[in-house]
Length: 189
Image (cartoon, rainbow, N blue to C red):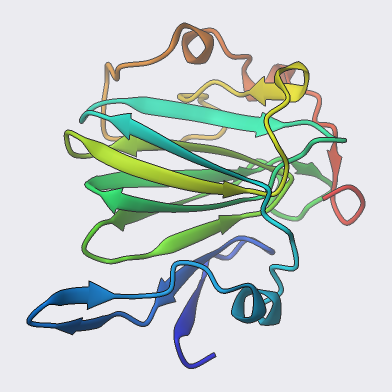
């Protein structure tokens, strides 16, 4: 692609994107999204909503998803600060069902992560005043939102934190063993 490098995650459809960054004495420039280039990578979705969150160090948000018919793919990145970004495959029948991938997204590495529909997503903020951006393939529909417990023992994510700052919803999200995924590998995601 010339200006984009793909970093494989070991989970089909999920990958990290490293853009080409042009730096000089003035600062830097890079394309955080280019429809033509992303379509060539296989991300053939229209983005219809952009979100941004601000969090301090020690916050964990997730693991969130939206059910069909409003399942969301997300292209995520850090504008300022740093996060440990995590995606969990929740596509029934997938060879990596219940497996996760984690990657640090920072303002210094400029990496983006593509999280297709059929994944639960979350992150831990590593620095105060971290700005996190999401490009989403569907708008927010509260009636279709879902979550899995951030520290689920069956998934086994090492967040590197014992007592994160959590929302009330994330504190009581269901465990993976009690979760009936609406996503079917190869069908609705």
